[in-house]
Amino acid sequence: MTAAYYTLGCKLNFAETSTVGKQLAAAGIRKAEPEEQVDICVINTCSVTEQADKKCRNTIRRISRQHPDAMIIVTGCYAQLNPNVVSQIEGVDLVLGANEKANVTKYIEKYRKETSSRDNERIFVGHTKSINAFIPSCSKGDRTRYFLKVQDGCDYFCTYCTVPHARGRSRNGTVAEIVQLAQEAGAQGGKEIVLTGINIGDFGKSTGETFMQLIQALEKVESVERIRISSIEPNLLTDEIIEFISRSKRFAPHFHIPLQSGSDDVLRLMKRKYNTSLFAEKVFKIKSLMPDAFIGTDVIAGSRGETAEYFEAGRKFIESLPISKLHVFNYSERQGTKAIEIAHRVEPRESKERSRQLIELSQHKIEEFYRLQQKTTHDVLFEHTKKGNKMYGFTENYLKVEANFLNSWINRLIPVTLDVFNEKELCFTI
Ligand code: SF4
Image (cartoon, rainbow, N blue to C red; front, side):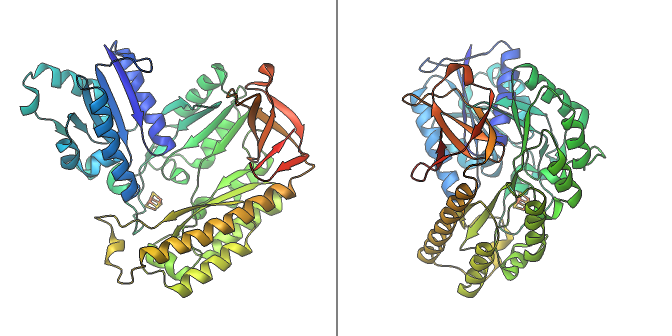
């Protein structure tokens, strides 16, 4: 039998799809080649915004049309949150929730035994409170990086977020399990690992360990040259962690610290666990120890309760910080979240306008960051993708570098002085 895999959403989903693939491979189900007709399609969905939900529905429809005879299995956050909607989509055979994702082969077996498919029980989605499965996983990305899942779920329940409903409470693998996966990735030639999770800084809750212990242990994995932390909440990014990274040989000076709003009033409505002064403190601490560090952040535009004054205060706050890039999201109303009880609602047009302003601000910031890095020397990890006669790679502080293609540079760290800034392509050319 053959299977095809489709992933929507975050890096964590990608890592998890690869784990499902390994399960099926162990059961003798081979990964199909592109264009091959398949027996099973696994679609791992995302539900971060309304747009993401829509994209999932369209993808499921498209794939079931492309593979009319295949068993269509839908799992992931959208399946966990909307199992009935998913099961009604033409062609869907099985809907598996977050816990059940860890046991896909068992449900395939069960489904195949019970022959009259349409009347079978087709939805296996446990209650959010029962979600407790955790399988550490490591997947090779489409470039040279490996994505190492270290944690899942979240206990924070920020008012706008559905993640704790879709993925359950915070849990993680043990430090020993994760170190072993990192060693395996290194042995396979993986030079760079990205630690992924939902609320990574919360690592250790379920095993009695700490995130600090995890990074100290990973620092000793000599076969891996570079480790990035995909994202960490500002209140969990301790000075101890920042100081450790500033001395580290392996952890990159590359931070992603979600801010969500630069207004303390909005942060309170969101029930975030920090205020703007704590966030600023972290950013300045990083910059004082690692002046070249890349600092990215997430910001939501037009969230419930964000008045024009709050937005403007937030925008000014962000402008004042040495942040390198913003990931701007338009607020998306999610059923089942507390945010929809907040009275003040931002008109979609106004919300779009705020996004536009933040994206413009981000563009200024990233260009400024690149300019400040001109003439500096860094190690670039080049990737295998060839575009025309060019190849691309990233420095430890996440600057994109373009070079003439050289086979011998693929997956190697090459020291490079950054001279020519290509503003249009946002990269350095060497
Ligand atoms: S920290 Fe808040 S925004 Fe992030 S996943 Fe948890 S609930 Fe959602």
